Image (cartoon, rainbow, N blue to C red; front, side, top):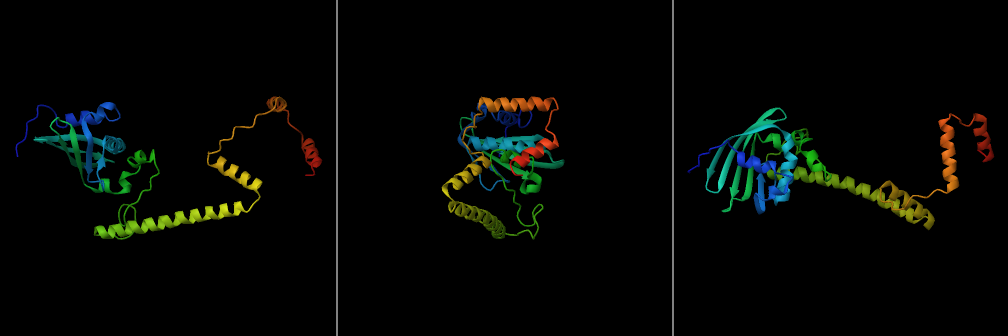
Length: 252
């Protein structure tokens, strides 16, 4: 295999691309539907947007990273790199494939040792916080991985079974919560219409979905509140006898 000699530091072109992430220029380095494959992903990221999100989320996990070697062979560029993640030494290889126009068609990322990218203990919170910024995230390690108990599965089929068990148990808890909500709604529907409206207003307020405008105060009510605030500022408060007299007036 022939390789092209470099007249600059390894990885400079790729570093320049990654540094443009978050700008319109980042997309101009790729074809319309580029692919990102990584040893830490179960499926490729397809499209510039998802690739940008991946790098935005993972960039914070590296304490240091530096490219040590770069080799080009035809449309492929192989970049070797070393760095530190959470204070530990790591390394890996990035392989870029470009089309005839020089645009990136695919990115392949390989890490070593893999455990730094394969369990949630090492990914949380530096990486997962980036994912959780726009969606709910549930961190799951397979049995015997990270802080999960049990024996580590030795086959993909066994790994699948443990994850499936988690999903069933999690779904069961969610179903129990849904059942409780259904019971509450059924009970509310047996109440008079006015009471149902009151409950609906409370739920909407608790969830932040209440669209009712605030109740305007009359000029007299605004004056009374202003007078009360002024009296409080002067340290003028009702005596115990005055409070008891008000209570007695209302039968309390």
